[in-house]
Image: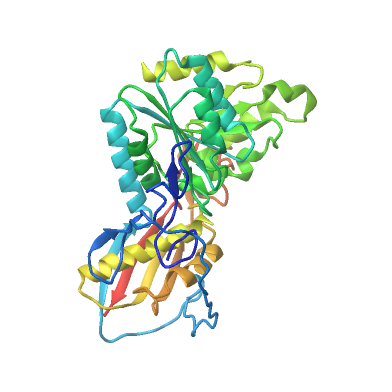
Length: 296
Length: 113
């Protein structure tokens, strides 16, 4: 079953360059490599698949004696035959393996990869645009944009002057390592460059999915609550860097920047901070210096 | 709803292991989920109901063991249970702590036939 559209196929997402349409894009397919029982071998679905779903889905919700045990429900059920397999496997091991492959690929090509995560509207795309404009002489930028729908962000990045592909996750709430693996191939990232991955705007789901990035960067803006770090701690805990954006608005909002940093440090004492305003450029120097130092 | 991705991964793992063991179906699967794993257990159970349909797990009992999250204080080395990710060490009030368990997302075992 597709985890985004619920159809019989595996996950569906699209990867496009600006100007490509869904129809002419060969990658709008079910491309998750996904093992199925029927023929006993692993295969990728690669046929094009229009997502109109005009056939009748009948949902029988009769849950034939759903025997899902509750976690606090201790039932006794003895089978006299059968075998027990000790699996001891991380549920995310497939994603983690692909993420490590991505990481190895980035290392070999000296690509510094950033995974930008935040809630929608904190300024991820604007930060990328501005960084491209300010640093394009010194840095080779490559951008992967992640959104549920639209090419809007990819179009903005293209206008700013960097190669970009857009991943549309459909109903998916996060990017995963497999999407990045495919997007990087389409993007043809050169050696010695900076790859910025803008994740789907969501402070919860992307935290569990390693993409193979060198650093994970969480962005909050001062128009949000200063308690974001403790409200959504998993994301702050899994990040390396925290950018506090829109500092030009500090005089007009009740955001206590020290309190925000204190909360973030309670969750993750390794976090490093950048305070900046993409709009006015205040604090951007430090950010640029850091970026250059990481690539050089 | 990343729980649905998690559920799909569980089905994939069960599928592979069942094939490896030359078995036909799973009658019980045991999962270990840490209380700080980032998963809402109810959402996972709900997602699993859909994800297991037409899979080797279709008729399997799903047993979920929750693993209580614990942290170690980096100052006094006290080990304590945690209910969130931002509380200090109850012994010395230090915030510099490290999680030592409770992030688990694991398929522990399968019973197949």
